[in-house]
Amino acid sequence: MALQPAITDLELLKERPAVACLLSGLPQALQSAKFDRDELTLWIDSIHLLDALNLLRTSSGTRFTVLADLTALDWFPSEPRFEVVYSLLSYERHERIRIKVKVNGADPYIESVTGLWAGASPFEREVFDLFGIRFQGHPDLRRILMPDDWEGHPLRKDYPVEGYR
Amino acid sequence: MPSIDQFRSEPVVETIGGDRTMVLNMGPQHPSTHGVLRLLLEIDGETIVRIKPDIGFLHTGIEKTCEAKFYQQVIPMTDRIDYLCPMTNNFAYVLAVEKLLGLEIPPRAMWIRLMLNELTRINSHLVWLGTHAMDIGAMTVFLYCFREREEILKMFEMVAGQRMMTSYFRIGGVSMDLPLGFLDYIKNFAAYFPDRIEQYSDLLTNNPIWLGRTKGVALITKEDAVELMLSGPTARGSGIDWDLRRDMPYGGYDQLNF
Image (tube, rainbow over all chains, first blue to last red; front, side, top):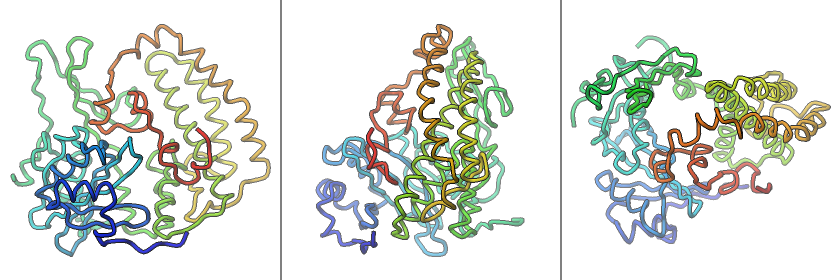
């Protein structure tokens, strides 16, 4: 199973249902794409996040009805510092894709997807708690794992693994 | 967007039902929570009209700990994500690392992993079934389930030297070959276990008390299950025909029939 090089050329990926769906329905949302190790990742402009997710969810060619996971990455010290990651799954077509949205480090916030998937609420609270990214429109954004009076966001890369803060 | 400080607050304890309902605090330590979990219940008589879970009491920051470890050192951490699913979590982790490396593993290791993964699943289901039945008043089932679970833990001890925190899987395979006699043991288990499932079924399936306490209680529709991001047996319980092993096979499941 030798590794194939990753494909990042949109021209080569435009046949993929998710890419085709966005290119025809919301081309301004799609920033870039990468196909690596049998996994497709799409970078979406944060302004169009909800529209893009809703399009992928409802469009008959994609039907990514399931939000399987929602998490974040910290690329400290590069900028934009964070990426919020949405793993979508289609029960009908047996396919997964990963949606990534870049979020800047100075004032990290992004639109909440709880209007599309109510179950995203605890996931967004976890990302808020551990990365300090705020979700606009979340019905009840509070810390979920750490105590309410905790200082800092433990999964940030500039937060120490051991010792006193 | 408001600042972070605004989000620091205790859960709101205002009732939605006015004078009819009351708020009851359950946990963090309570005999039926199996772990440390606090639930703020708003109840109308015996009906829960709203619930606010407060989790995190068992949060150990495994992801943070893993930041400062080598890839091999993470395997024992994955055991501890769920003490009923050590091998399943080992499996998910090593598969991810193998995918990153583009690593092909020997067929024997693949089959050993699959067997143990399925035993782990049965082990987890047995603890679920036993404790769930016990919580709603059917004590006997618990003892029956733990009888078979014990056999599975013995098999874990045979392969890994540990009953629960096995750390048996490795990136690229498993830590060592199966011990002599293991295959006979597992064949024997596979031969008598279906009959044991019948025994659990005899105790519960037509039991009026168990039916009365489960049937139609907290029904989740198919649409709600998708919107609430439910997965696995919970999603199947809501009528979603989805089994990852069958529908998007990984780690060798494509060679099995379902």
